Length: 338
Image (tube, rainbow, N blue to C red; front, side, top):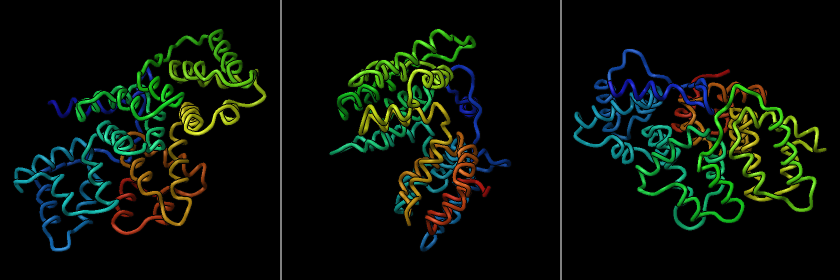
């Protein structure tokens, strides 16, 4: 029963109070036979030259809970760990994609955060993308899993790896103190926050960043959407233009990511994917991360936002900018052409 209840628990990811509906491209397969899948994987991995296509067909078309059952059966049949076997059999971008699928969404996000802060230098882009785009509930999960996996607090690692206002903003988000959405629209509070954002930035010389951080990390998402609308009646610039004028560097990127996600989170991911596939090749790490982390959450909706915004499908774009087995795996996660 534990597996079923854990799976049901994953069906509702919410942005605040009420459950946010999910739009996955990867769903549990019907007539699931983990032992048969495990045996097919064992054959595919043992084959001279490795049968990548079978590995892709199985792992990209099963839900995370099903992959876990396959891993359990695999160990029983093959007497070795599936993750170790995949590591030995695969390489490059295909390997990181497949290993990503062997983690739950929260485990994957946690390990991507850990990797972004490992060793010398910080991968701020990844840090910003994950911390600023995940809902309060997702961040609560990620923090819990991060501690289980790495025996350290996510907050401590973020604090040790960033500095200044950028650190203050990320820490404020990681503390997950965001209000739950309320059924009551508080027009007075909306007006007050809109005016505070204006007076802390565009209206004065210099920026009172602390006020921006407080409002953007503590208020509920529906409230903030109304605040940004109201903001336009105070400021000659909308919120995103104001951010570009007032702050620079990682802080600017973080605030922009937040505002874009408050307004339309799936469009934010669609634009990130489009950016990652602008040039001849693709920023494979970004493409892998978004497809792996969102395929059981909202990739279907990201796909439709992508088509609306960029006038061509995500499927065609991936087909054009990637190749080989890695391309096949991405297209399978993408789940179809629009």
